[in-house]
Every structure is written in C-alpha cells, then in structure tokens.
Length: 113
Length: 113
Image (cartoon, rainbow over all chains, first blue to last red; front, top):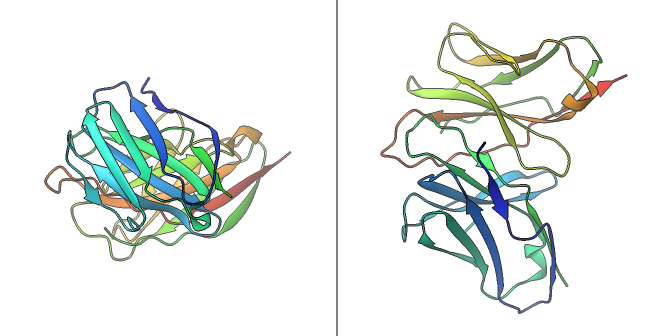
C-alpha cells in the first residue's frame, strides 16, 4: 500500500516562527500536494509539485513556500507563522499517469499561538 | 475543473444502502468523477472513479447519469465505520501531467445503529 507520512500529528508554534512541515511518500510518485483543511471550508490547495524542484501555486499560497529537493519528500514552510495559519495540514501524492488517485497522509494539526 | 454540489449531511441506517448524490452539471467530456471519504482524524481515502459507465469495486458502486451531470455513490450495506465525510470531485483525464484537484466541503454521512 502507498504510504504518505507526515512528520508530526500535532504541532504547536509561536507567532513569527519559521515552521517546517515534512511529508514523505514511499511509492515513487511524481506529484505531491499540500492542502489545509478548515471547518466549513473543505480542503484548499496550497501548493503542488509535479517533479523534483518544480512547484506550482494552488489556491491559497500566500504566507507559504515549499521545497522538493528529493522525489519522495515535499516540505511546506511557513515563513513567519501567524495565528490565521492554525489549521489541519494534509499532504498527498499521486502518480504522474493522469488517472491515478491521490493518497493522503493523516495530517498535521498545527496551532500557532 | 468543474464545480460539484453535494448535500451537507445525510443519515443512513446501519445495514441499509447509503446513496450519496453529487451534481456536476458543468462537467466536460474529458473530466472523470472521483469519490473520496475522510474518516475523523484521518486523511481522505480514495474510493472509486469513473467517466461515463457505472463502476463497482470492493468498497462501493458509482452510478453516473447518461448526461453525466450527476452521479451517485452507493455503499451497499452501510456500517458504523462508514461514518465519514464523502467528497465528490471532477478532474480532467490529462492536462499535461498536472493534477490540481479541488475538494469542496463534501457530505457528512452519519450511519445510525
């Protein structure tokens, strides 16, 4: 089975800190994604990557950046954390072949104090 | 990608079939219908997808209307473990390798003992 692993289930940080969320997948998938999930808003795409060192903005990229130095790893970076970035963050991966479904990690619940 | 509309919530008696509807009236010819579900405290899980023919797998059946403007996910014998939020999404079959996928707010299915 595909395994998408997010480094932390729960994380608490302070306003202004630089925060790194890590995601690793073990199925050699080309595509990787970062979403945030908030009550009443569903899943919103922050960034996605279709290859190493490649990235594309999603619907809400402001305040975030990403890094994909290796195929299996996709990092989400909050450059200067703010309280409105308190949320559940979900990472996903999928194969390049167009019909492949996305496989999700179990999420990181991030609280910014 | 086409927008989808789903009811906010539904109830289903345990052991009965759960029928979850989805409207996607602006779907285009090369867009597939995908279903995912998200059980509490977990990431979304892929269920099934289809283009125009009905599909069935070990988890569910997908019925797509002839005009493709709506679909229904059927869980034939709902159990308490099927209590989750169910997402219907549509996405293109091929778009140069990018797989930007937009999730809405889904349908919260409550299976009642």
